[in-house]
Image 1: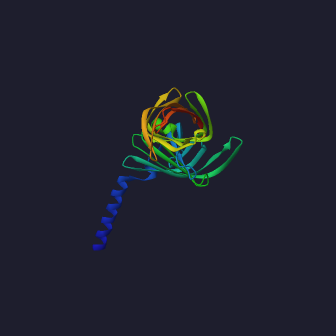
Image 2: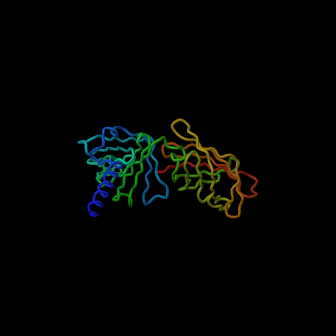
Image 3: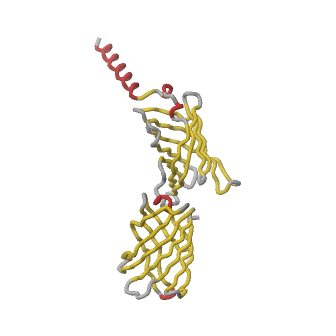
Length: 277
């Protein structure tokens, strides 16, 4: 009799769990079918900063009442295709898992196919979601996270920009630094900006990295504008006064810095032009 009692208790527990978590076959997959719009962040082994892609979309379609297919065509990362993706529901929240492939390459003429896995969660209202694509065979492990909403301006400009830095003092040309770098890093509507290894070789002046925090980013047409009011930062033991203004658009940065190091009576104008490519 005790054994029978335990059996019924176990059966009741299983039935209760089944009520809280629906079986895959009981989900109306048409509920989550459709197009999802948002932005993507990609991280990989060879970059300290993630790469962000605005204006992304993917599509989910019902297959046979039991699984769904998913397609995601990224203008940066290629085409992702999944079939037989399983869907589970827990308290109105959907979770997806599947295996598929992605076709990507350095150009449209040179592409390769790579295995890719998918995990995702979608809210009951479908307006909040996160799709994670893992491509272990690319760039030391590529992970792309596709999320809902409009990408914050700070994400749009984040990156390492490499180019030239033209230097002048009171209108006099003081030379150009090749392979100069500006690093922009941040979230939301503010970023930090670092001008790497700044110096004025023609005057025997080596200062170092100038980092300015809490830089506000504003949308400016198809691009973004950065404006830095006059501020003081410490570089090593040196006080540096600087201000800057510039634009970032389509992976290109054009920024003009005004820099006054220490007791120098004249401002150095440093004009940076570079890109993330």
